[in-house]
Image (tube, rainbow, N blue to C red; front, side):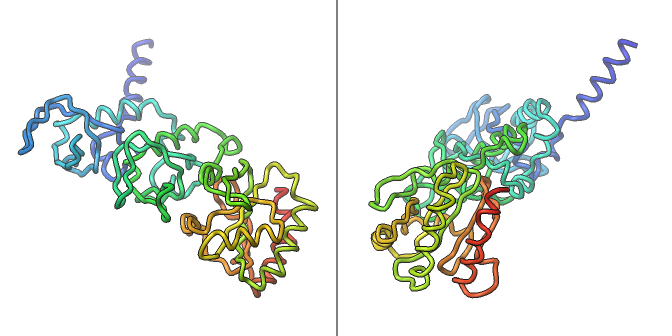
Length: 325
């Protein structure tokens, strides 16, 4: 009976191992790097066996690998330890961790880490994301990850396997949803400014309320005082809610002057960096967007009927109830 149990256990373990076809189109199953099993010769020189390289893609007949010098080359499955390295990690994962795919990750923001570490360098014009650096996560799609860089007005999109996003998502998968921190706090860290243009931190919160307005907007001149009054009366003491202005002015100074004149107490995104958050939607002003700490929409004026002022009033009337969920 003892030998029968051991045999059954061994069969169960082997059945859970990956095969080469399991790696095709599944970057979440790839290791961060693979080592060459054979020596390879290129015009630029020799790459000895044991050289660690990163993975560009996996095909049914082999893999495209990235040399330390940056060029891509093709190998057969037996020319590297990619499958063995993948299984060394895979067999230690829980079913919940194994269930994470690129599609699942893109559709479940609760699994998005606040930041990711760069594994393979990415170049975006004058901006280069170097291996080992960490950047906030803006957005995830099945075929890419968008990160934020202070020198860019747009989010920078790169392949998911160029980062450690899957490893970090698997750590989050071990936690119940209520224990997961979300990515919004990291996304706003170091970005916002106060009414004088000085850096102003946004508190970590369960909900984030964005206010879309402009210094030249006649409708905003009507709504802003009401919004500020409502905040001061019933929301100023909330530690689980953060408010951020989203100016639609072309530059920051006019909006900061507007914020001072209207005693807007919360920080603002600089107008020059608002495009980083363009994936959150387009809003007529005055507009309000409420998201949870995972970036999920909770309440938004651009989903309500009627003129912008009517929609803003409707959201304001619902705001406190929504923030109590």
